[in-house]
Image (cartoon, rainbow, N blue to C red):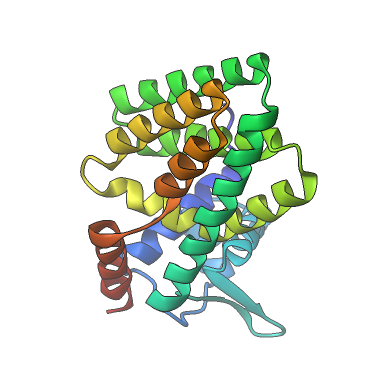
Length: 218
């Protein structure tokens, strides 16, 4: 899977924010960062747009692009909403998915497992993202699909970051297997619960994510 330069830069900027290199409210200096990454301003501006779309940055007219970190309540509310939306996608997909589409998900899971075998978090996330987007489409509801995609983009940096929790990729993979099993069985309730539980941030995972954000904010 070819990765655009702008996406690589956006990934790196997200990691810098989580590492505390940028604080909440810091301005992203276009000239300085273009030099730092050794790129023209075009891919950098595209990377900024991805951060803006995810809510990790905001653009203020005539002032520039600034880092923005959500508070814990806002983040929890977004994850709760995402979990419910994905649950609905799973329920509808269980009723409508084809055998050919199941095969696509099985192949996606194979690629996820290969990423785990190589301890490649970024590759795992990309294959994981494809897995989820494909399920949205299998819901057969284009409006629901677009809403799921919109919120998925908003939560992307946080969904990527929680994969750094020790053992999370392996746990996520097991959840993928359960999701596909429910879809194969045509069991809407099992698919709903499997996807909802997969996305929901609860207990220790959420506290670790919030701790990371607090560290980044100093």
